[in-house]
Image (cartoon, rainbow, N blue to C red; front, top):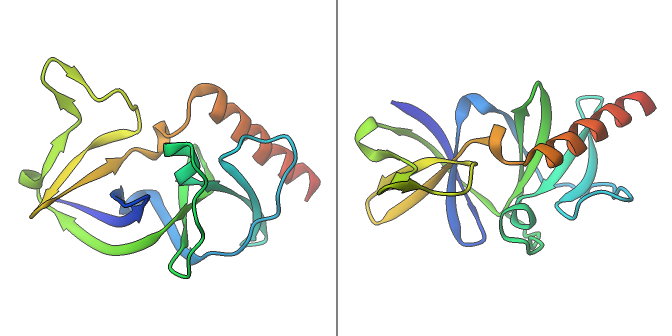
Length: 155
């Protein structure tokens, strides 16, 4: 049994394991940063620190997300730091039993996106379970960790 938070992004339902999440906050417009990747929307102040904000639509689909009244920021624990992921809507918390979970191996190969940990089968829906530690490539991870370090030095 796993507890997950289910959210919607780009008309697709995703889930994150609850132990990876610190908090869900209302969307607030981040301060833009120069010379960063397209999916880094900027930073906001969070618990007296600087929190990088990621446009999950841009990261996953290559198109900017549309901010709606239902948009939220999921603050996740990531490589011993915090990151904010903008999502379209939070659908709820669910306890998933092992029968509803399927890993990302399909046939002889497996799904190519590293961040897909598996799938949750619920009624008529298939929800993508994400592994946030694998959401970014090595170079993207380096950029985010360097950005976090720079922001802490300036604070």
